Image 1 (cartoon, helix red, strand yellow):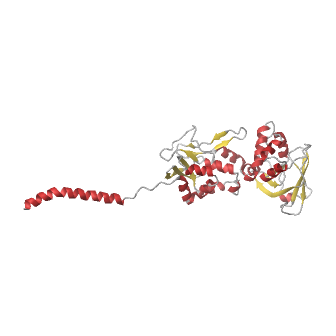
Image 2 (cartoon, rainbow, N blue to C red):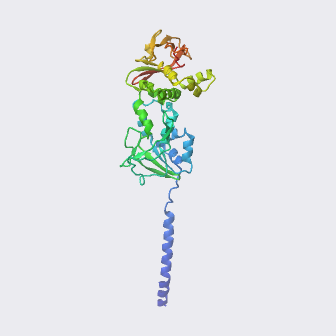
Amino acid sequence: MKKLKEIIFTLIFPVMLIAFLVSSLVFITGCEKDPPELKGIINIISANSEYSEFNRHLNKFPDLKDLLNGTSITTVFVPDDDAFDNLYATPGFPPDPDDINPDLIKAVIAYHIVAGKYDMNNLEPTGSGLGIPTYCDIPMPCTNTDVNQVIRVNDDLTLLTGSMNPGIVVQNDEEATNGMVMRADQVLIPPVIGELLNSILGTNLAAIQLGAAFSDMAKVLTIVDCSVTDQVPLQSYLAGSDKFTAFLVPNPVFEGTAAAMSISVDQLFSAFTPQQWRVILLNHIVPEEYYKSNLTNELVLSSLLDGAKLSVMEVPVTENTPEGKILSTSGGATGMGGTQQAPIMIADILSTNGVSHVVGKILIPD
């Protein structure tokens, strides 16, 4: 009987052991956590409070947001909020980022997006090669030809962009269903925009070239300097080291002037030749600095246009004359008719090379 029991145990024990091991394996496997479910790039960015400034700007451009919310595989180098704070603290940077021309903001945000999936395992130095293409194409000022702004990767796997920092540190953040989010310790600046910022930040020209309110004046400046190449570029006056007072014309004034002529703003640009526009804009630039306090009643200023004058008159402060100063033009022998009683709407925009004032009319010379 004992012998029989030993035989039965010998036969059954291996079966029981196998059953025990299988059940244990199932139990252990069941206790293991499932791999985290991947989220889309937009969800990753919007869920991270440290990406709030990048997300705020991204939300201004539905086409870029749709791209990152779609099925195309992309990698986004996302600067955290500290990176934006550092950018905004750059000397000469516009005090309110929301006042910057939205075309420039969009170009910067698009520059952070590249096709394909990159992480620290497959990011490779580009050397002096073509670099990594981005979703940022910028038209060149005089040819209007789009040039893709690339990101170059240094030997230490930092990024070389148009930023003044030659080595932007990036690291893996989170894999997405449609690509990868990588954290950047600096805002990536497209090379063309970086060159612009380095040459104009803090100057009178910065208010025009960067300001959303002065994009029409910026276009006219570009038309003039690209077309009239045998004379000193107007932008060199506004971005140079000599002190000037500039009278800035905001977009609503261009729009109002065009509407009074029953034409569009683009047609207004074409209504004068580049040389005529040059003459007009020269009348908006005065040598030396004249702050609001210096613009006293009956003061006569000589503009950069030979023989042209700007006369100051002090008037009561009203909704239409908020600074209590108006300008009238005379001289210049242009036959353009002149401008009377152009109000100064905003005074004393300070810069490293002078001061600017916003005016309510285009200062057409006489």
